[in-house]
Length: 261
Ligand code: IPD
Ligand code: CA
Ligand code: CA
Image 1 (cartoon, protein in one colour):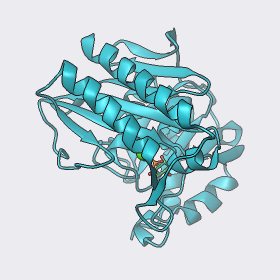
Image 2 (cartoon, rainbow, N blue to C red):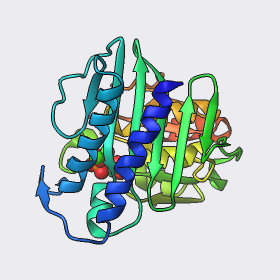
Image 3 (tube, protein in one colour):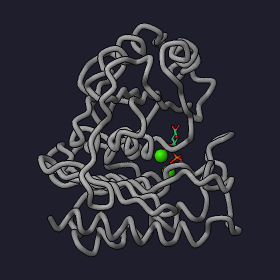
Image 4 (cartoon, protein in one colour):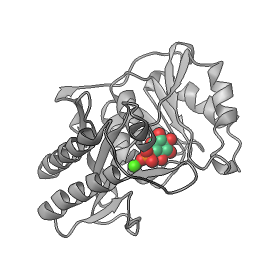
């Protein structure tokens, strides 16, 4: 599939830039009080867009940094997060990735998530499975939440009651085996697909955080929903994902402890 090849070469090129700046000096701007963007996010995005546009000049692109007008599904659309985990990257914490998804008529067709440090290339193609460095991956098999390692995140907009994860987090602490929070939603989804985490939930996510990761989870045999228990759409902000063994339990606890604003 040409789109997969292009997504992977764009992710590799962006990853190379990101890695070359890791631990070095770069400029940082604030998009919000704690929401950062670095020159590396921008350079990585420019490179990705150049590669996609050269191969598919007519395709729509929704990318995090800059023009966000392509919010509607298009016949062909790319959804790009050039650097997911910017805060980690800016602090030299090694947990970040590039995420690129390709969608046709509103359906995600392929997605890649690339961690340039390890290096790990996750990819999925609709109907063809999910892979890590070309080896097939699948979600984990625990059947009880008490034995599950979960991961979550906290949005930048901490004062917005719509995105309050604290009550859910407190509730889940006593239900799961353990919970991690490590600052890259896209990589968290890839790790659920690979069975490293048993489940994930987060509020306030954007399409570029989840586009590729949602397909990875589906193709790895996992299940996704929004907090209202409906099928997760890319335009939903609150996501629950897990393997089928714990999904029902995770979903009912998240739903039950969520205070919708
Ligand atoms: C963020 C990360 C983080 C999540 C935030 C996202 P960014 O993306 O995925 O884990 O909690 O909601 O915005 O800004 O690093 O690309
Ligand atoms: Ca992101
Ligand atoms: Ca980003």
